[in-house]
Image 1 (spheres, helix red, strand yellow):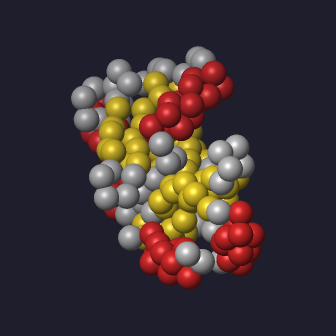
Image 2 (cartoon, rainbow, N blue to C red):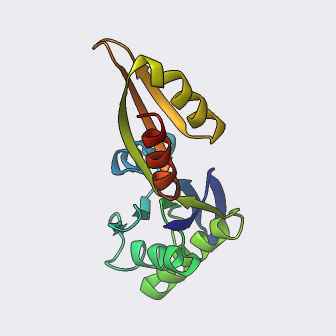
Length: 191
């Protein structure tokens, strides 16, 4: 399964009735990663009136959330999330930092402002295709280890770590779902 996503952060800006809206579209693969991003923005913008957001994290069992951060219910997080749906992006967070300019926008004005701030970011984004990854630990005999490692490297499989403490090599890898059958074939050829 592939998804549409991004691999770097994008920034946008929108102004409405003296309020300033800074938007950040960030690649996000985990809830803990999202929490770190939010904390960083709160540190960077301690005087912001609101930091509203939406995220879509995961592949098949997707985590979805929209948050208004004190704005009227549905006026900020939902318009941001709707833009993520419109762009069909996953494994991303979209934050909008608002500095209040002294003029109330009303709920329709807020909805429009948050939507436009999100669009400003999304229009800049370079979309990439990403595939779900599996994390596996392989237990290899010494005579298989070097051949299997060579095959993994030749096929751009991410080797996370390798350990030889139990008399066998323990190799932790991540690989795209599409290469699962290939791995099974490689491992069976060295058995």
